[in-house]
Image (cartoon, rainbow, N blue to C red):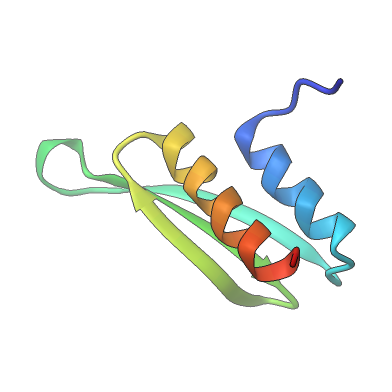
Length: 73
């Protein structure tokens, strides 16, 4: 069993679904109390899913759930 990071898990499920040019990005958005982490799933240079959470790991986990609902039926 592979031990992948949360970001790599999102990218893997997108590749298995057959997405063309999948990309996963994340960035810290400044704000009060440290701000939030924004995670995005991108296909063909278009954002298909976006999540925000204070913890970067949880943001990617929530993105994984959204992407799996979108691409895997």
